[in-house]
Structures are given as structure tokens and as C-alpha cells.
Image (cartoon, rainbow, N blue to C red; front, top):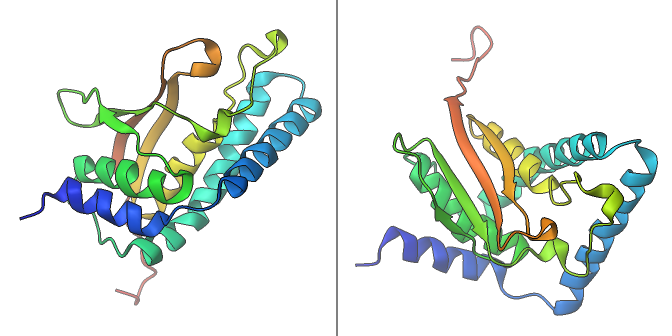
Length: 188
């Protein structure tokens, strides 16, 4: 019998169906141009970080429908299963990578995604005057927005980043609460 983790990895491989390297490079360069423009438009890195998160959130809110349709994955039973789906299916499907899920909190409400390779930062070096820029902060917003659409409130933030000299890129995710659906009267 296949383990759930193997099935998720298999689903991610099928949904990803390797795209050409040129598409990946085009995406990376386009994202770089976006971040560069935001750095020109806003006075400080904190504002750029907020804009990247906001843009990511808006993408996540819409991307979840595509993800659910393409992956045929049903509702996750718990936060651990959610973590596996994010790492083994979603990241593989959209970025072609499979981060490891690690550093679970004792309560099981917080974990880290470790990205050995972050395709968003290919060809990127942060200039000294942007030392507080969280270059890939769009990913945090995407995760937060997508999970909100499936009734999960989460806090998502970067803990480590290879662009800042860390050995790995680490995204920390914390479950805050299950969002209750408020249906209008008569729609129950």
C-alpha cells in the first residue's frame, strides 16, 4: 500500500509535468523585474515586502481554484497533511521543487518549509542598500491567501534566506485558526 506522502509526491509529479527550462528562466527574470520596479516605486524595503506579500495574497486567493482543479486533492484532515500537500504537490506543481517539511512545534501547529533551491532567486544578488528586502516574500502571501480560501488562517514568514547568506531558505508557517464560513441567512 502506498503511503500518503508517496501519493502526494506522485500527484505533484503528474501535475508538474516538467516544463522547459526557458519558461522557468522567463518566470524568474520577470519576477526579478517586478521586484526591481517595486524597489524603485517604494521608499524602503519594508514597503516593498508588504507589497510583495499583498500581491502574493491576491495570487493565492485565485491560484487555489486552479490547484484544486488540477490536483484533485480533497480537504486535508489536519495541518500535517496540509503541510505535505503544500510541499509535495503545490510547490512541485508551480515551482518545480519539493521543499522538506521540518521543525514541527510540539503542539503540531507550526512547521518550516526548507527550500534547498528557490527558483525565484536564480540570477539574484541583493545590493547592500536592500539588506532588509525579503525578495521572495510573494510566496508567503500566496500561501496565506490560498489557505485562507480553504478556511485556514495562517501566519507565514521567512526565517532564513540564501540571499542573506543563510545555508537554506526557510519559510515558517503557523496555524492560527480554522475560519468559519458565514453563510447568509437562508443559504444553509
